[in-house]
Amino acid sequence: MAGEQGKSSDDRVVIKKYANRRLYNTASSSYVTLEHLSEMVKQNVHFVVYDAKTNEDITRSVLTQIIVEEEGREGQNLLPIQFLRQLIGFYGNSMQAFLPSYLELSLATFAEQQERMRSQFTTLTPGAGLGIYDEQIRQNLAMFDRAMKMFSPFAYARTDEQQAAAAKAAEPPPAAAPAADDALSDLKKRMEEMAAQIEKLASKS
Image 1 (tube, helix red, strand yellow):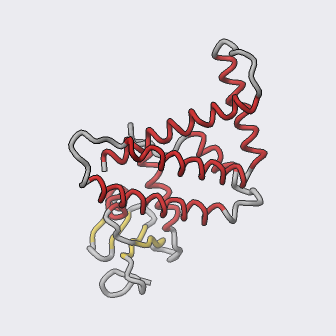
Image 2: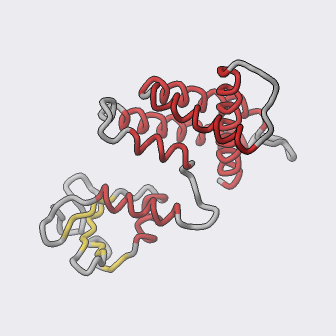
């Protein structure tokens, strides 16, 4: 519930969403947009969103809308298509209850490492790149990949088979090799692409 200064009991800014879909910041007494809320998140300003009529907490749905808006911007994509497919596959899955905690822990760990990188970048000599962090990034991605396999090994296996089939249809068949080697090559390629995206984002920070 909002206090006199437009903040909840745990000191979060209270945002009200009205029937006309307008968002009202009770702390600043002004209407805001999803873009404003996105900036508040980036500035570590904690807020909670309530439906103005029912007083229902709709923070999750509003944050999801912000992600959809950001993903829709050209060049702003953070979520790989394969990751989104796997994420959707966990809805209704027996392991669904465990995934949120794992993702939250993984992002928290990544944020800590990013902050450590930023502080270390200040000591790098001019011209030094991110190569020294490649191995750490690859290890993090490998750990995430192993965890995803542990959560849903059968779904993951089907995905690898589908990607291998698509690759074979688009390219001339390579020399005979074990199926496990093909899956490993696909995994390494996927990890390298994700590492490149993370490296690009880190360089812009």
